Image 1: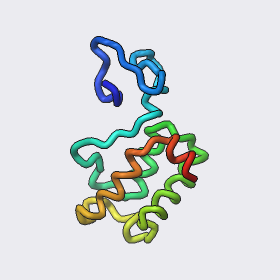
Image 2 (image 1 turned 60 degrees about the horizontal axis):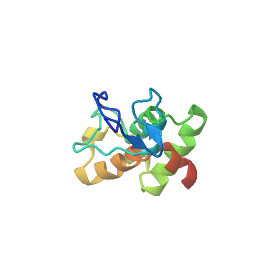
Image 3 (image 1 turned 90 degrees about the horizontal axis):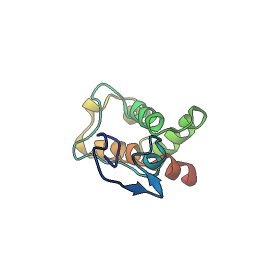
Image 4 (image 1 turned 90 degrees about the vertical axis):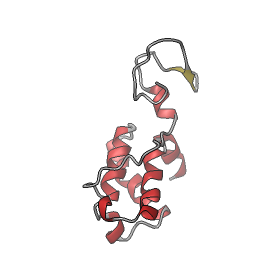
Amino acid sequence: MLTGDTHVTGGKATIASHHIDGGGRASHHTIGYCPQVDALIDQLTGRQHLVFYSRLRGLPPSQVKRVVEWALSKLDLKEQEHADKPVIFHSNALLVPICLPCTITNELFSSSI
């Protein structure tokens, strides 16, 4: 419920002073989400995952390319063979750096770049 994966069924909770059941997504833009299982789609590349999760987290389209390039650079994934290869062909050790920026909120990206 806190991450928005399931609907609120009862009770009250706030994240950064935003009520999670208020109908808006403001509370979800202030947290990251790291699932217990890799939330990667085998056919997508690392770059495509970063674009997908940036947009999913509400990053404005005008900032997506800059944020993706920043994340790839910071995680040493800038090489095209890593950034643009479907994740199904990556080792488990390389999947972790791809998952990490997918969990970071747009506020963290915006303040880090």
